[in-house]
Image (cartoon, rainbow, N blue to C red; front, side):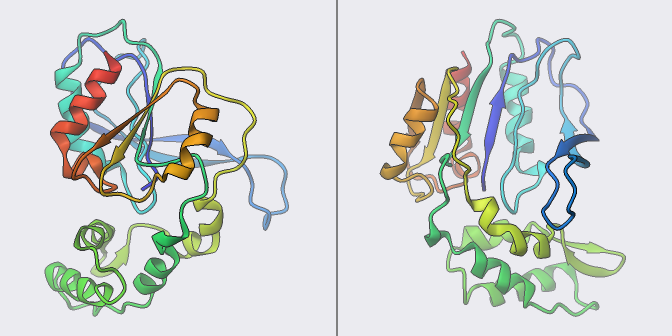
Length: 245
C-alpha cells in the first residue's frame, strides 16, 4: 500500500544470489511504554544483488504488504540496469501522497472483516483462502484487493494465521494513514508514479507534493490500479528505468 522507494546508484554486477536478512533500526517508543529512548526492532529484507561499496536500489512495501511484493520487479531491474554507476540518489513514490490517506479507502473495515473470520484448522490452504475470499467479498468488492490481502494468509504449525499484526494495525491505523506535517523539503529528483484507476493520489494532494518535493515529476500509468507494478509491470519498469537514467 504505502510504497516509498528510495533509489540510489545501481551496482554494475548482474543479478546475484538472493538471501533473506534482518536488520535492526531504532524507532520511536510508543506512548504506552512511557519511555523516551528509541528501541530497535528487526526489519526483514531480501538482498537480490549489490556491492557493499555501492548504494542500493531499495524497495519499501506498504500496508498489508511484504518484501516479496517486488521480487520479480526487483530481479528484472537488477538484470536490466546493472551497468549504470553514474546514477545519482533520487526518490520514487508509487501511487501515494505525503498527506493523510483518503477516508474512502475503508482500511478499518477491511481489518475488522479479516479479524472476524474463523478458519477451521483442518481446512486446506486452498479451501481456507476460498472461505476468506467469500467472507471478504461482502465488504471488499475489488477482486484484486481481496487477492492482495489473501497473500497474508499463511499456515504455521498446522494452523492458519495472518502474516501481518492485525491487532497492532487496528490500534494504530490512524497514525499509519496519517502523514505528519514536515517543514523541510526534499530537493532531489523525485518521481510520483500514479495508477490511472487509483484514488490514492488526488488532485488536491498536488500542492503539498510540490511543496515537499519541488523537483517532483508526476507520471500516470493508464489502466493501473494502486498496484502499478503488478497491473502493468512493463510500463512500471520503463518509467523507473527512464527516471533513473
